[in-house]
Image (cartoon, rainbow, N blue to C red; front, side, top):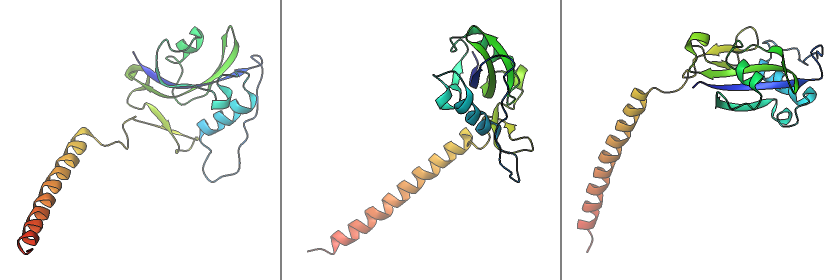
Length: 165
């Protein structure tokens, strides 16, 4: 099963629109930050609005109690505010900011991060994370250092103890 990071904003009705507040900046504001601010200010969902509309992080399919939102998590475009999506609770705007195990839908770009020209850019979830090869190499280097340093300390301790009465 795939995992996703999803945010939603529950609207009054399908025609409700709100202007998301932005400030004049050289680079566009990060879409997740704008979405979170709007959810906190306008969302009618009392369980997620104070968390910026965050439903969950990397939750499996079937996690959402609302089948319409759960289905949307695997159909909407990654990194784009989508909706309104109708459910028994009302209408939702949704933003999936990270989704794994959906290569047919997302390709290798699975996570929304700040940057780019549109308030965010998609990258691989593993970008910026060390590879297993690097982790193993770092561990080997650490143990070699520990063994050599331990040997030097042991030799110095033996020399010092020989000079003691």
